[in-house]
Length: 436
Image (tube, rainbow, N blue to C red; front, top):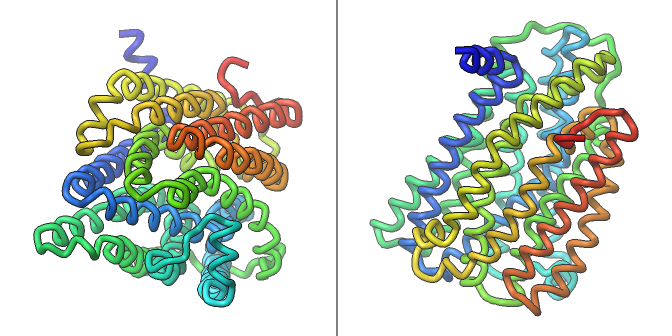
């Protein structure tokens, strides 16, 4: 009975209870995501699956650049405005952010046709083909969707945010893939994936404005005015960090596409997707703790902040380690469910899981740096790790194929995690790594 009481008390803590509720929503999203993946890998040819995975990686990377770190800075602004008792002003900031996303997306689409394909393919390892040309127009809609999801968090609608991020985001696409398969229109898989974000952008924008009009009263803002320039200046380091982080996760797919074939990309991408089961826990906790870090740090409540960080890291480990062990023990069996041939990703999956172990032990370091005004430090750490990642991919993929890509990804992940942990501990005395 004593253990049950302790668990109940632990759950009732704000950060723990919300994190677990968010995790439940995200696990439902993971279920939908893997149902979709299993259906695609078993119903479509590996070549089509590889093309889809390339388009998906490209859209996520370019869309993150278009959002320009504002999905993080909108959370920072919400913490600042909440401390000023004027969260209603977040709408003004949001509208300026959408304008910035649109401007960047337009520039990207123009740039695709101005810059020579030889330059992009030779230096950035992105093949310019019909798939790339289809993906670029969806950048704006992806960016708006991702911005809206975090804008919901900024106005304390975290569960609505998670419904869009993890349920509707996959549900619409899952239904579309079933329709394509049974209507014998498999060649439209990429188009269905991209149009999914057009639909999400429209629906999420409708619900966001509905909350803007009903939840907040208009007040005159007496603090520092948030101009376009101020938003860009605040968001830029976060944008570089986010782009660097995603490029580290996507570069292996881009280079495998260039150096191997779409079938190899399909097999390797399944291993990448399985590691989402681990990272989903970290992102669930981050979704809850990010606004609290910003508010507590701004209010100089360092002891309370340290306590929350410690609890969040403990919660991450309690949930992620059993998942990692389960995936490691039954990796071959799990891969077999995705279809014939996917078991070749076994070693790659084990290598990626090794990197996730360190990631889990290090806790919410990226969110901490972004929410405490240290986004430029985080930017430098990730850019350094990205350089190592690029070098390792160029060396290891020609030698070891998808296993080389997995080694490059895990190594760079471990490097930036440990570097950030050491910096945070020396700078603020905050112990993010479990056991320090």
